[in-house]
Image 1 (cartoon, one colour):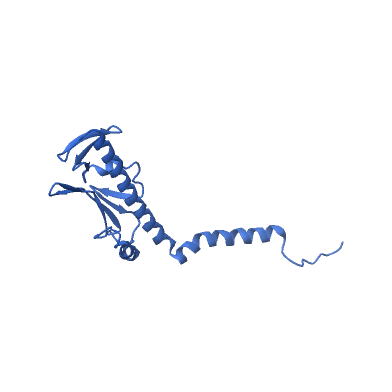
Image 2 (spheres, rainbow, N blue to C red; image 1 turned 120 degrees about the vertical axis):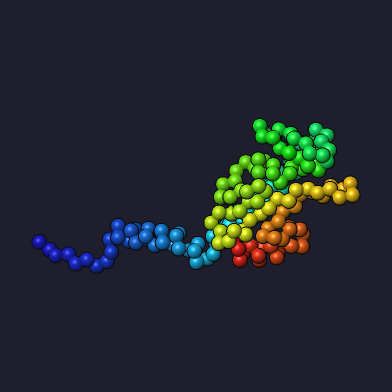
Length: 162
């Protein structure tokens, strides 16, 4: 009987090592790259876009039904939505959002779960009426109202609280 001397690793051993390294890379890499924080920020901004879209679509329904600036209740998808100034009010906006998964919702405040601070949130500010002119709803991210000039500052701020 000949004794064989093993000159290397078997194919099974190599595959097991590659699989283990792949699993470690998949778990550890996002932690090192800070992708969790960026994902929370993206989810928060996505929720803000959802709130704006829901408000605009509901506004269209309100306009089609000729509702005025006084408080009006319209049933949308089986849920009563209260409109003030032809837009959904702060108490009704959550009923227009199909999914709030990953968020804690209190009134018109949507706080991202898993964030490092409770200020990782977006707040829907209802439309206002001044001198007969309706101002559409706005969004507030951690105490800063979103406008064309504030997006960069909001992104920097969210990186510290999310």
